Length: 288
Ligand code: SIN
Image (cartoon, rainbow, N blue to C red; front, side, top):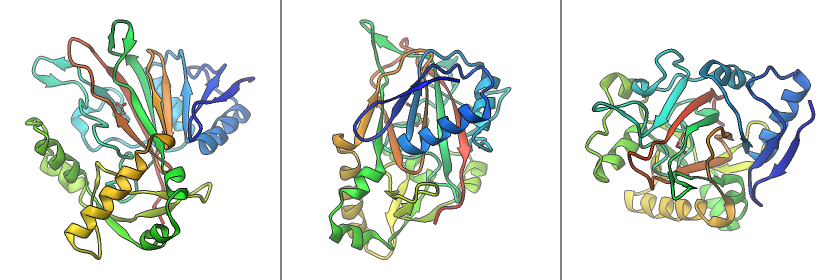
């Protein structure tokens, strides 16, 4: 199948044009898409119309899928789909309404984090015809490469604690009175330890793996030192030169590699402006 690949920014991302993801893809076409995924880290497919089962089927071409630990937001018929939405059904959130509020990479709080995620935009909020609720992506490979040699040496063997509970504590501190995890969710997602610098499992390139939303602290130093170094790294990761800002259109499918990228969802909309998206999440491999 003929298709084109156009870069989206200097640091990461590419748009793939000429593919209908609702149709089965031959192995050669799929292999080219997977190569583009590793080369560009974020892929955009515009004007897609994917049912829930078609999205699951396409994501499965890459490997096994996760069923998200925050199971109250999983699709009732397709548990591999996490609903990302601000829409309410009475007083119940139909989806995770605050996903991506802090820079993060998906499931970094699990012992085996996710390989990649795919978000299909079904409803996009707008104001005066302009989309709201953009998503920013940053290249943590570019961010790592740009660190000074001293800083690279300092963090090379460091380890950090990652925790979904940490994200919930931040939400509560920021005034979200609905933010809570059940006991079963806390048991399924206990604190884990990962190295701060990770090699990408396919490309081998080093990435800066700490993230604002889910990294609680660095090991082997005082809390104050850990806070200070994390703040330096978080500020560095978010620098505009490593980022691509995606303005959503209904029918967009964006997939990202969770190892060399982080993302942040801009929450500049509110009901009756509706944002409704389906996310599938690829299972990863144990980190280094
Ligand atoms: C996410 O963090 O997976 C969702 C990002 C978004 O809603 O734009």
